[in-house]
Length: 479
Image (cartoon, rainbow, N blue to C red):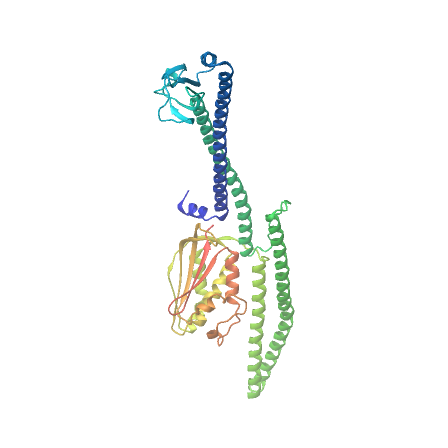
């Protein structure tokens, strides 16, 4: 896994939530395991103490009812019949003598009651040499002391078994928790990734996409329903706006065309009369007005045509005719097409860095977009200015992604008026014009059209300062 993918994975909120859940789950399980462990150990020791106390009560009753000799015989018989876990010592304090049992002496530092003792120095059995015992020291009379208890080796073995089982349980809990957290996070990540992917595509212009609904009625299903309703409402509003603009453009284009035709007819009549009457002054003035009206009408028709094209591009009605294009030929044709306009202002178009690369695209649409850009550069560059056109291959991150993709970069830079920082984010809006360009001809639709075409090609467009002037960079994917 690459460093970028690892960083992206660690920044995933769902994975962090799953790891947090796993940590809480493991911590809670450890507390539960510790409680079970201490409860089990406590139960084992209580059972041992209960056994020792019960045995002591029987021995005391036997001594009180049948005497010392019977007690000695009983202890001897118990050691023969019971397992070697039991320890006994009947000791005569006055005679300083052991009377019965498998312990050799009384630990000198111990008082009456419960104790844990090592058996290495007081046991007469070789089996007990490395063990410890839980014992109860009880005086039977002023002369006799009885010690009875149990070897703790068996209890220690049970304790080790419990510990091993608990450790195994912790490992199983960790594995199951990790698997559960992984399954939960993967399922959640898939759903969130689907939402993100759909939203990204919608942001790229595919407004007709919808999130799938699986009928589970969970939070993701509710989110998908609300998101789809929002998209449907947005699509309805966008369709209404596009229909309004399309209807306006269509409805006004027809009468404007008729007006233009009539003006052309009037122009021809005036020109005919002017020739007959040697071009009198009043006819020349009328002819000039008609020519100006025809020019204004042509501008209005061009504006409506541009609006229709933008609506087609943004709505997806206009489909791309993808072909393998040569970047050098496309840009060379573009420069040749705009050369006469540049010559009128003595503007030099520099094209020294045109690398030739094959890339997919719609030739007519790209030529239209690039022609708008170069036309703007010529319009806003002063006389005897310089415009540079270049192309090269470059790698950069895609929209909303960390993965780098190879692009064809086309740059058109001029030394004209430029665009202020506050205007750069708005120049792609319909009919938006910068303050310093309002005195020049234009309708504020050129960059909107360019943006629509580049978005259709899944490319990107950036505006930068050329100091002075504007530098427009277009990135078109090679795949």
